[in-house]
Length: 240
Image 1 (cartoon, rainbow, N blue to C red):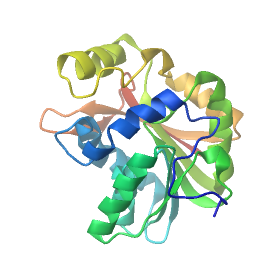
Image 2 (cartoon, helix red, strand yellow; image 1 turned 90 degrees about the horizontal axis):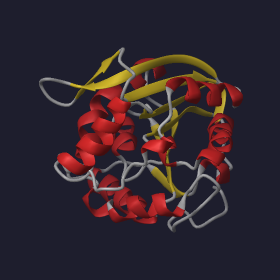
Image 3 (cartoon, helix red, strand yellow; image 1 turned 180 degrees about the horizontal axis):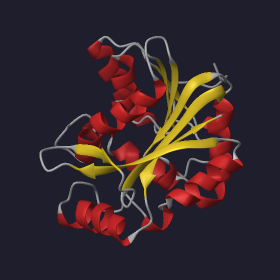
Image 4 (cartoon, rainbow, N blue to C red; image 1 turned 135 degrees about the horizontal axis):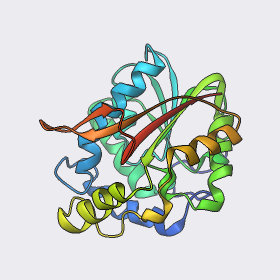
């Protein structure tokens, strides 16, 4: 345990108050697949499948899900036998996560905080999915260093985020927020998007070896699929 009340809201260097407030407001509708989190619901099977391929057998694997929200990734992992700790600075999202996991009979250790505040180490894998684009630019080196510290030697650190391209702006900002209204206006600040080379440099600066990357692209059928196109959404995996 990290010595703080794990059921209350928490903050840290990488938790921007305005960004946390955005996701506090979305907590009640997080598990609605047709609500404001619909893009994450659509993306989750593809991104988690790619992650699972890198992690190998999930049974008994200790995984830290940083910026877990209401638990989409955490529950996917827990249902497959992983021992999951979910960490978030948004207290309302954590309450939604705890309630949903309890209703599903899943045991997930949800905690309030940021990775800089976490005392535990030696996780087999540390995830930060759709998180770093909400971390202030000046705090990103410390955020990546905290993710790396939480992983055991040889462990994985995997992030997903948005590329800073015109296509990503058109898709995630103009399209998703203003035209299709999939997301509340103001969810993303495109100036905070990261190019893969930039995120890779931050990971290497934190002592991680970048091992793999992939794009997530909308499927013509439904949801998303893993591709080589990193121009909008992408995943990047490193080893400590």
